[in-house]
Image (cartoon, rainbow, N blue to C red):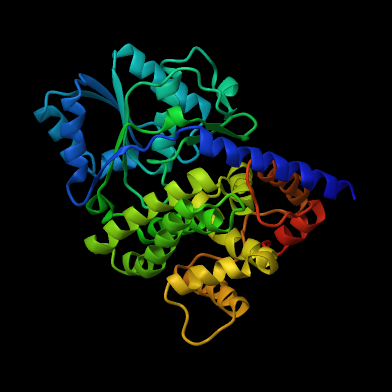
Length: 402
């Protein structure tokens, strides 16, 4: 009975978020798309008067030379740069502080993020810390950023997070390992480049896991109770493109056409969940990352089928529409049959990508705490289609143990 009353409150809060989403304008970055678009973005950075950028990335991308053409193009257009390659998966406060110090020491007037979700999220936070006299903790949550950040540009090198078009950034407390989300339109990049050609060298495992991250964004946005006609269009397009192209790029990483389609799909999925929201998959996956440093895409991939199974009686009609849009309908199947067909297709994809159904590091003794944290995150942030309580969540998590 008590939980039923709580659900009423959660639904009211999500309703308020939906109204806020209609009232508060969410900026969209100027997008450059296609092979070579990352270099077009570099030219555009110079055209708006930028003198020196902090180039936020990770050490591996520097090592493999992925930034070489970007650096050369910046130089050709008279833009100086300072490279900060200290970002690691699940960036922490200390990594953000180090980047901010480097930015200030070198008088950078803009920030360019090149990489996956971690460098882009880190760059978002560095950008707003540079202009707001607040700590990360005081900007955590919804709409707590007072001043616009420094001019910020993004070049994603994975097709997964969609962070280049979203107004959220997630960083971690290095002591407690708790995730700190900062959700504010002021974190949206000014410009971004979707350059699929940059993604051709990504290893198969990262390609698969980041692609499943994007698919999770699209599906959770589509089944959200805060979905709209606009977010449905983006989520449907993303789902179709990912199901068609992710197997191609996992098998043949040099397929530039499929890579570009995945870059677009990731962007569409980001646009969808920015307004429609996420769900339990992300809430649980975030805690897998906090407890075990599980890569975010892998966590989402493992959790997604279990959550869809749990919510099936509520979302079968919605999943059926995604199945049809993705070309999975072969006969006159019912909505229930099509929904199950989509879930089974996702499981088939995971098997093909060598992504396990269980999380090896998940410890049974951690499950109560993980469930509690995941439910708190979901119920106060995500418009889920069907609510679960503590015992239901624990039961679901036990299915993910070896």
